[in-house]
Image (cartoon, rainbow, N blue to C red; front, side):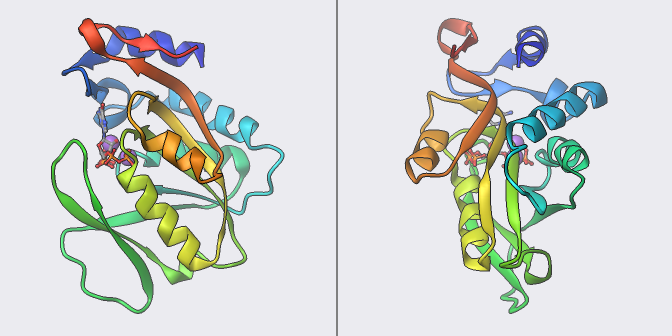
Length: 190
Ligand code: G4P
Ligand code: NA
Ligand code: NA
């Protein structure tokens, strides 16, 4: 998505060779028009698949997941994060480490909102090592729902997350792939 590359070049900043600050576009402020375009693009990429729900993890995945759900005219479910999870027979949960925050959280989805009748499209803002993504994929598998694939706004392809998920045979579509942040430069994959 060329428009998104331009915006990243103008508005993102490099924290170090692994981390890109995207507060202006994804993690603190969002541009409604740009986010609408993201949703339309994900809907276009998955137009051939009958999707019943869009799913993401709170919080930064929600805006792009919302516009995708809007474009597909289906509900959006967001997995919730809990600091400590009390075992709950009515929900699925997974423990996931966070790459940027250096903490472990539990993500959970109520059984009510994810069933074997669903085919879900998983949207997320950024994929790095893919720990959060793998956690939600496990939840989707346990629920019996089908996973149409992933839609990622920014894939950092120099980290293994998206690649390992593709190697599992899961479709992953990214709007932008960042090949490297070395030398203080954002280098996109072609
Ligand atoms: P993931 O790839 O499945 O997201 O898991 P990973 O453990 O690799 O990343 C965990 C968190 O770190 C995610 O946010 C992810 O968006 C964020 N992250 C990873 N790399 C970068 C980066 O270069 N820049 C920024 N800004 N964030 C990065 P989260 O914990 O899910 O939190 P939230 O933003 O949804 O609240
Ligand atoms: Na994030
Ligand atoms: Na996220």
